[in-house]
Length: 258
Image (cartoon, rainbow, N blue to C red; front, side, top):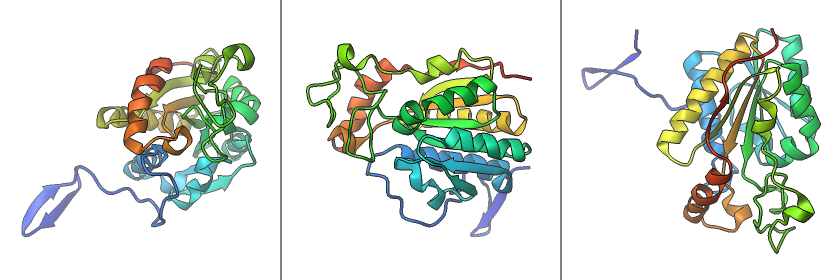
């Protein structure tokens, strides 16, 4: 039965409630989609009523303070080791859903080995990968996911594939592993895509609770500060460049090591 509230003597069905985030000011830059991701994740936690049955792992990077916002148990991992820490938590507490929130530097550079091996083993964790093609927290340097020709503080003439290789499409890599049960690439640049992202989070949480294997959600995001753009300009660049190179949609919906 739907929850109802009474106001001015009238009864209304509750279709949306403010997520139960902790009451702290967010440190994310204006226009950054990190806050949207955490808000949607908290909505899923609240709607499923699993606040005490889900554990998150914060990385080193822009999401380092996720534990200040998420209203659930959280752990802090060393740089790049979030998937390794999540593996340990999930194996000790298999009845819990366990998630990581990681940027492209933490996940696709220093933590690439931990990420790939966790996926290959089929650990029943949720990996939330925020890909904004840049090192957002440390000064806007080139990341493994930086686009060809993209200017960063460490590639002032643009990324040269002959020198630095092509951007890593991590979701395309992990979908090939037997241990992954769900691999998807989503965005939050508009209301339609935000709803799709929330559906993906719901599916991933169910997979983790039911120990079906690794769920990998790549959020193709933005970084107004690192890209040296206003929030509005960053959305335009996001849609015209990021979403073309990293197309959205499900890459894998079944699998996992049983």
